[in-house]
Amino acid sequence: MAGESDSAANDRGHIAVRTLAMPADTNPSGDIFGGWLLSQMDTAGAIVAHQRAQCRVATVALDGMVFHEPVYVGDLVTCYAEIDRVGSTSITVDVVTTAQRGRTGKNVKVTKGTFVYVALDAEGEPCSVPPELAE
Image 1 (cartoon, rainbow, N blue to C red):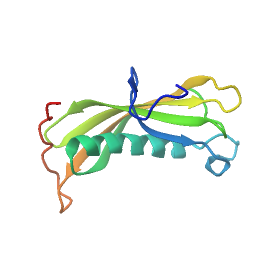
Image 2 (image 1 turned 45 degrees about the horizontal axis):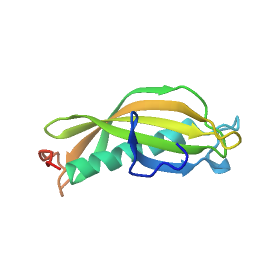
Image 3 (image 1 turned 60 degrees about the horizontal axis):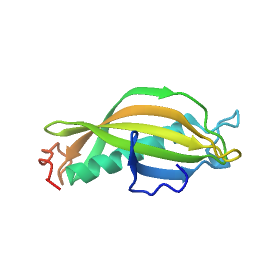
Image 4 (image 1 turned 90 degrees about the vertical axis):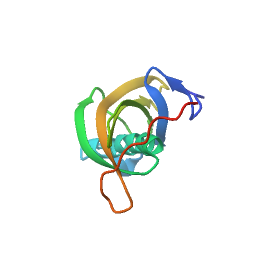
């Protein structure tokens, strides 16, 4: 993954968020706090959902969150996001997160989750997700 461009896609999806795990993001045990990682993943999913909905989106559900490995200070965290399903007002996004270990450079899958977003109009009410545009 080193050197992979932000627009690159692979079997995990497109890179939506990439950040460095810092000491301020740790839990009392010294590992990266799961809530921080969940926030990065929700942000990644929301970016992809927003791009597809072409309007404001809000998280309405998180399904199937699984932590495989811890994240450590100094790891380069990458969230890959891919749309799984589009409903009339909702978008389901699969997010896979990897960590490039700061000390070894090894890439490991650390977590995955499925996020559901609802498209919202200017008044904050659910609205229709437009049809997908042909490329």
